[in-house]
Image (cartoon, rainbow, N blue to C red; front, side, top):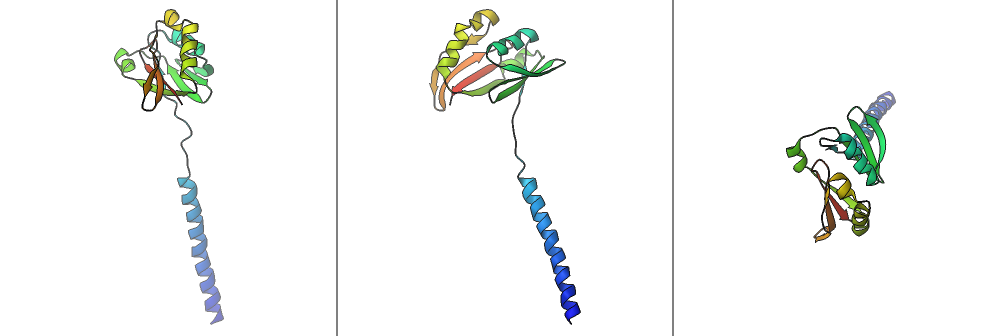
Length: 148
């Protein structure tokens, strides 16, 4: 009789161990997190000018590959792609949170980026989600810079 009890105990313990392992696996599997979003942004017809423009906005180059460049400023990252499609670019928008929209707009104007690159920058406008200024880049992409 005691042999049966010992055998039953090991049998149950085996299932319990398997259940614990499965539970740990499921917890670990479900704890996977999305870490970043890095959109591919078209450069328009002049890849080098677009790259230079974003560097003047304060982005630095993390890496370069054939027709691609990884750009970053603070926690914001994107991939500039040597790609020209006017219709696509004019329908592509990005939202960037900034700490001070007035300071951002002033820096763009002080550097004379609209004159240098032919970009457009709007006025600061209040929105329900915060104050915002829009920039249309060289390719025609609309960047919404929103004060956080």
